[in-house]
Amino acid sequence: MAEKTHGNRILLVEDTVFLAETYKEYLRDEHYEIVCAETGKEAYAAIDECMPDAILLDLVLPDINGLEILEHIAENEIPIAVVVITAHGSINTAVEAMRFGAFDFLAKPVTSERLVVTLRNALEYQRLTTIVDTYKNDIDRREYYGFIGSSLSMQAVYRIIDSVSASKATVFITGESGTGKEICAEAIHDNSPRSDKPFIAINCGAIPKDLMESEIFGHAKGSFTGAIADRDGAAKLADGGTLFLDEICEMEQSLQTKLLRFVQTESFQKVGGSKLEKVDIRIICATNRDPQAEVKEGRFREDLFYRLHVVPIHLPPLSEREDDALDIARYFLRQYAREEGKDFEEFSAEAEAAISSYSWPGNVRQLQNAIRNIVVLNDGDEVAGYMLPPPLDAVLSGSRDFGTIDRVADTGASGGQPAVGGQAPLIRPLAEVEREVIERAIAICGGNIPKAAQHLGISASTIYRKKTAWEDCEDAA
Ligand SMILES: Nc1ncnc2c1ncn2[C@@H]1O[C@H](COP(=O)(O)OP(=O)(O)OP(=O)(O)O)[C@@H](O)[C@H]1O
Ligand SMILES: [Mg+2]
Image 1 (cartoon, rainbow, N blue to C red):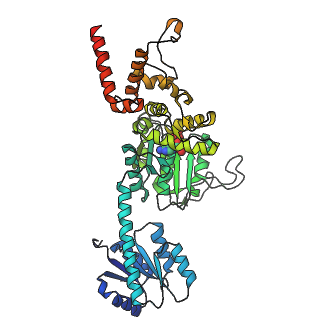
Image 2: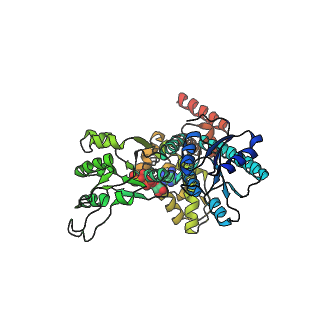
Image 3: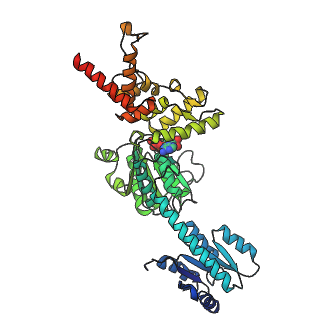
């Protein structure tokens, strides 16, 4: 493949030699590197091999319609600006070309000035687009397809999705329940050249075992009671697109064998069918189990596992995503408020602290449910601490066993000062309550005193001073 450094390589696709020579002559002073193709076939080869920055494309070619080339470039998001040459007066073709993503068009006869200016613009546009794309991939993304979150661990996930999408390689997604495995599968499909073909999801855990084979491969009429007609399965429906096998570890052993054959050959037979059918699909699977442990325990075929485990993607639990929980909470607060006709716009500092420090064992799904609950059951424009549903409210209920805040929250049990008869005392010394509130804030902020001070609305030096005073007190006692 040719090395490309200048950003001034032009592919001229024109079957009339005289015209091609004329255009070259018009562009002589521009010092472009011009590659010529006379047919569609030659044009495709040149696109692959010399990576032009812009194409001057005559739509009438001996072997294909030039629009096909345009479509190919758009579909595969090949970074080339296309300038289309149309016959004089064929405005419909020009409009169609623009709809297919052409940068501009030139109607015949093409003048030297128009050709020069249009190509200069096309190259400049392409140069800027390339810069933007480079930055887009480099900067931290706060949202990505269905995902919200800018944590480092999610940036890594976005980058893997970016790089794996274009290929057909099988992706194996792992992650706890509610971490977004389905969103991840959809993101890969939407980001791939197959995005305009079907995305078919099959939940291997939700379908009765005896129906599973027919769900995936389809069945022939009369193959079992109730099979009143031929029916296509997911494998056929996903032809050209993506087949998502969710909860793959729940698949029965005998079907695992059939799946292995299918993955190896891309061909299958319907249940009760005799014809071998061939398809072109991309497989993505997901599980919230540990697949290697399933293999070790003999519940999942090792050979199938290695066939499927080509590109692994692990979705981290929400508790390992820095401040993502808050960003996701804010997003859903606004969305649900809109849906429910409420005014909520933000969280109080107390509610934010609880959301950030809670461990979210049910991950994003649990967070979503909590926010929905808050919006449905309350009114106002700010979510106050008292609106938090259990077990989130336990994070705020005065536990002094700060190291176990998450555990307390998980079980829904609230901590609190033991008191006579198991009741909290009605009145407690202010200094004691103050110390408790400050220590809880520090614990919630993961030991970060300046952050705790910010949430408490006091200065960090006040906290440092008070801490010293408490320690002095303890030493004296
Ligand atoms: N990063 C995220 N940003 C916004 N919404 C998310 C994110 N991750 C997941 N969700 C939402 O959380 C819910 C759960 O996601 P999803 O169904 O993809 O999880 P899962 O890992 O497949 O869970 P399970 O193992 O239980 O099937 C969905 O409603 C999804 O839209
Ligand atoms: Mg799922």
